[in-house]
Image (cartoon, rainbow, N blue to C red; front, side, top):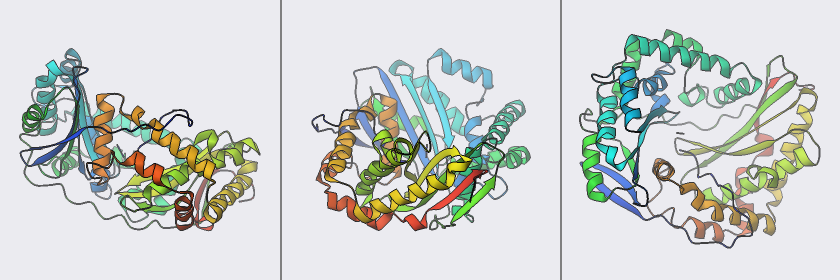
Length: 432
């Protein structure tokens, strides 16, 4: 899990706003601070945790080491080979997983309350005694290499890789977080163990829990889950530089359609205009058929089936990124319309009605993001990764409703740069 902004669900824009807040408790345990939402309605517990790092700690030439390590942690640990480890999880209906994205390494489990001792045992084994058996390494490697190759078989995959490589050419954010076919093929087992050793540390942990567990039980659980991890914290990843604008680039791909990825610098997560920008971008590009871009590109002109853009958050910074696919002959017009809508929003801002609809949608849909313990724990972890205070969620609806049309107009004029959009087109676009 990349640290992304909260994603709205679906609720009628006309629904009356309702107050919503999760009763978040802060639990201290053995030097680790955890956020907890206690709910005994269902006898299930979800635990989510992360460290800063992930793919950002992969050395040059070892891209994909963190992702491979995450995949291998549940492929056998301690005395249990891969099949026995999988059987142990299945026997108790435990879901345990790990993942590495561009700037975080995450873990988490979901288990029935009665199965917590086994979930704790298996999670601790995975982190402290991963086997990395040769057959498991080669099986996971083959799967990762095939995935990396498939990602480049489509114009969309080519455009996405090209966009990030050009935006951050000298930073790990510009490299594929899951590695390339070449780096994964050459990756030795020692590099995977090195990734585990760098990342799995006692300090730097963010922990969140939700479900049928109280503070005292959570303190004990945390002490058991993370027992045995080496002291110290993971190394700090390199600071993310500013987005490097690169104009318009074309990657030739034999295809009847072109895939387009476009974007620009966004805002730091702590910027006071963060939420105004979120609402403004929903109106411009993130509201499905309600967005200006969808109306202008699809409904008015039939240029593409869909188009959208939003904030992609990494290293606590937002990058505005969008995408569209269209016939090669219509790429130039699609980009022209997109820039026109970008410019119109920057110069004029939204209408009062657009603001009211967007805010009603975002506030009304907020509870749907917390429908089960796993989603609660994961969402809390995202808040912590973005440096939010514990009361941030409780005040979100009120902050959104307090935004004026002038606030959104100011944010649009400050953030959006129609002439500064960076674009990668993969395909055979006509006239570019």
